[in-house]
Image (cartoon, rainbow over all chains, first blue to last red; front, side, top):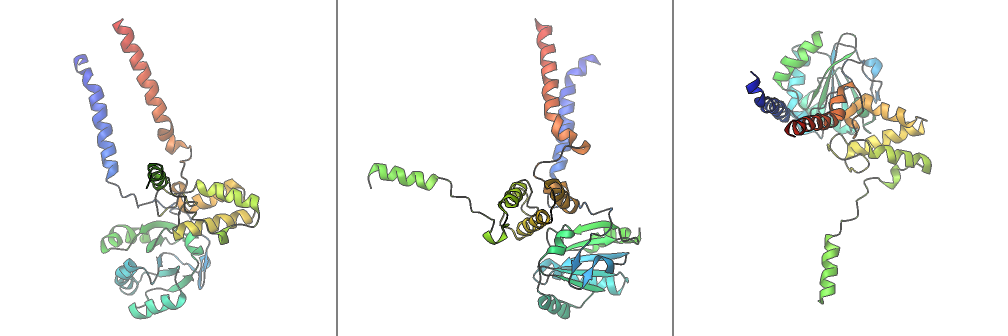
Amino acid sequence: MRRLLFLLPLAVFAALATWLYLGLGGDPARIPSPLVGRPAPAFAADGLATADLEGPALVNIFASWCVPCRAEHPLLAHLAEEQGVAIYGIAYKDKPEAANAFLAELGNPYRRVGFDEDGRAGVEWGVTGVPETFVLDAEGVVAFKHTGPLTPDAVRRDLMPALRR
Amino acid sequence: MTWPAVILALLTALAPAPAMAALDASEMLADPALEARARALAKGLRCVVCQNQSIDDSGADLARDLRGSLRARLLAGDSDEEALAYLTHRYGDYVLLEPPLKPATWALWFAPAGFAVLALVLAVRTFRRRE
């Protein structure tokens, strides 16, 4: 046994190298949200404020100038119409006319829309880009944050379980 | 061109371009002391959409918004700590360019020194045995 001890540094190095290598696979754009586990932040957009939110619900940050928002839009419509999910929208850094035109063209899946033209409400939500979607549980606590456009997979795996919690 | 002129031209071309100030004059606070605090804090805050630039350096829209929020907090009478806490509550510790010292980051802060001590101990033991 003692004779094999010389292999120990190699084993330690291999373990460390494997761990660090796996770390490289992570997505650096994924930033854990400190809001998860806390009540929805205090914010006031034009037409939507913290007191208006009633969980369980989704809070979707979108903008008419954002292409991935267009891509995820049918999924939001499906969630609102077929699954009866309450969705609140925050039009981030967007002119109200432009956001309204976007919703008139693609349909409005939102229970309420807040217009956040200067991005102040976005800062309260810790928004780094659009789209972003937060899940509020029945108590109005942030249960999950999805960064980027929603996919059917993400809805099934992350959003629905978090909504039901 | 004469040689000195060529050398001068080369040196000028190689000299670092003056840093483009991301900060707009219209963003600055009227109170110079408050503005100085805002600048100092902004240098330590990460522009979260450009990974490793501070919000003081970055021309990104979000960096501009965060500079605005930071100045609004300072104007409202926040201490430096309170203003930083406001941002870390929304963007996480990730927004700080220097990771804070806490149990989750002990490995980060102390591992290098730990490894150095370990290496020293092992080296001393190995060399003693040989003598």
